[in-house]
Image (cartoon, rainbow, N blue to C red; front, side, top):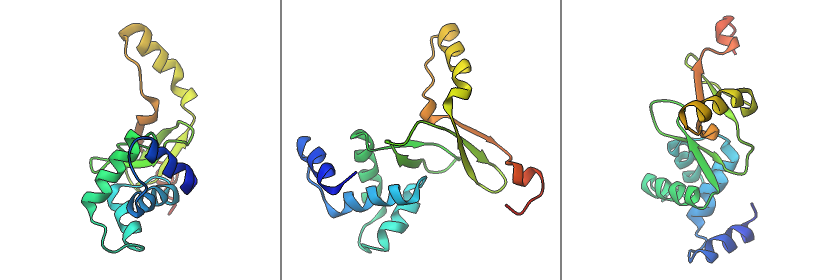
Length: 142
């Protein structure tokens, strides 16, 4: 997203484009999948005075605006990525911590079955499957 379109979106909601908001969004874009702590580390490389509370508040705002979304890839902090990305399911390796993605259409039959039988709509963008990746399973140093 360009700086001008981000500024327009914020202005239309009565907000302004601050340096911190721009830096946080850019960090999420650059990192791909990132925890607030990882975003904080990236932002502090450019603006040392930005604290972790500002990062959390900015990520929450960017999510309300539909610019980023989060998922839980561990027991710790949520992991954020841009909302403009295609929806995907996360595969998280419990050994090496690697994250892979796959097309949610692979689990669409399960999601449809849950909707039909239980009236439960799966938010596929938040689905994470935990296990062991092929590299770890095969003993590779991945």
